[in-house]
Image (cartoon, rainbow, N blue to C red; front, side, top):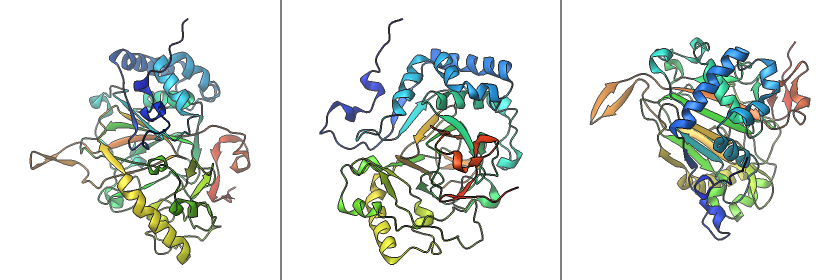
Length: 373
């Protein structure tokens, strides 16, 4: 078999020149009808063979399944993405039209994630997991997120939480954030599969690479002086627990990773930031805001795949169940999205995982582990 290299249209254009401008938008991959049909067949095949995407036998051999069953072009793009931390790597890939979603079979969007019917989502769980397997990484779940809640999470607007800074919110902008920024062992990669987005809510992304070279404002973010409270999913109605201070930027000093949550670190008055830390964060936020990208409006079947150490995500405010159609408000099915998280190494997170389940992360806050039976 002759191996084909990834074409220039399938990698960030910035790789072509060391002097190219910093990336300001995610790479967009248009999935072909043949690739889409292959993925649909693969999802059906795996559902019959393993019944559930959480089947231990399936997850144990996930990388093998990914490289055997995914369309080769998709596998090669994700495999490269998993180790590309370069100046030209934005940190997110959009797979347009990855899946054909049967809207009738999906049925009405439930009122909240607690009432999601995961029997209808099983096929999608297999396909999302294959994407993570190609990186390669392993899907994981966090006790801090819904006390686990499985490897796949339905993200659904909840009227009772419409004004919160959570995935269930809708009526306020969800500030860009890296997922679970308050954890030292946060997810490495995220996938967001849009089953429906009839309200036409833009996908909001922000990459640390969009700044270009490190400047004096960013240099200050390497200092371990910043509070990173638990977000509103876990500390609703409570005073945030003051934890150990940490840095916002980490890793390589020229091409760093980022741990950042604008809502909790800057706009949460109870975060407990020192004046120096707050001033530094505010200066950084003023530089970051113009670099936020919200030009892409996902459609049913699109997937946004994110390196959680390079790229933060969020969403614009919207009214669930309605959209503007030529100046008129029209009712529609409410938004529904599926999120999966993964880690590249189970060995490195073993100190914070469940004794009997190395895929179940028990970290509560910046290294502290939940006290559970």
